Length: 116
Image (cartoon, rainbow, N blue to C red; front, side, top):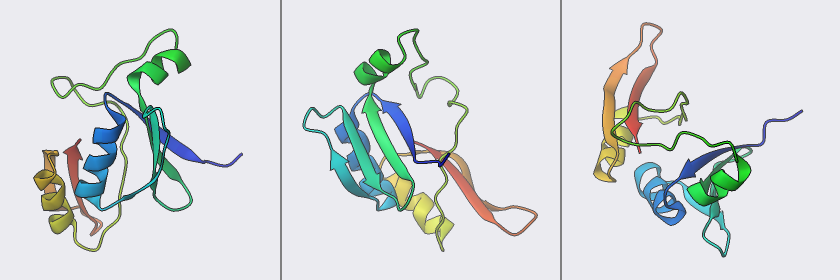
């Protein structure tokens, strides 16, 4: 078995693609003509977006939609950069919400968290 992609179920696929392009400098790889599915250019593993309508068809028993007024989902998407502070600021300028400001972990790694 080989890990191939992560799909985020989102309210609006086009807006999510635009946000990830602006916030994280990712490039769109593919967007389906229906606008219900898109993939970003992220190397060997794909980051994809699918609309809630498609999520409901894939998960007929339901799922928890993401909502900024509720706690975040139990998932983390990690990006590696040489300058976390600049990437953090860029994400905030694109509309992300700050969760954890850049800080250095005991093992030397600088991390930050945002919500999209």
